[in-house]
Length: 195
Image (tube, rainbow, N blue to C red):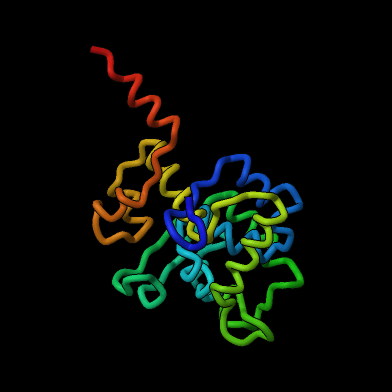
C-alpha cells in the first residue's frame, strides 16, 4: 500500500472502480471520467493521459479507434505506442467530447486552466485524491489505475509480451515487478501444494 508517497500504488477492486466512475460521488465531471478512464482502460501513466493532443485519439468515429501515445510524451521517450480504445473508455470520451468542458479549439485533449497548455499532473492528482477522500478509499494514487489495468490483464492470462506492448515497459522484468499479487492469488498458490 502507498502511504505518504512511499510504497506501491494500491490495486483497485471492481467495487472501488464502480464508486469512482459510476456512483455519482467520485468523478462527477465528464472530463475527469475521460482522463482517468484513459489511465485505467489504456493502462497509461497520468502524465501520458494529461499530455494527449486531440489528434492522438485516432479513428474515434470508426470501429478501430486508437489512442496514440507519442514517444515524446512517454516516460522513456523511446517508443510511440498505440492502444485500442476500450468500449467503456469510448463512452467516457464521447460524454466528455459532447460536454461543455471540452474545448474543440484547444490543441490538448485535456486543456489546462484558461485553455493554456494541458492539465497538469498535480491538478489531476488533486482531482483523484479528492474523489478518493469523499469515497473513503485509501492507498490510491494516479498510478493505481495503470497498475490495476496491467495486473488485471496479467490475471486474465494475457501474455506478458502483449501487456508490455501496451504498458511500454522496457523489459519483462520491469513489468513483472510492477504487477500486483492479491491475497486470493497467494491462497490459490498455497492450495496448489498437493504433495
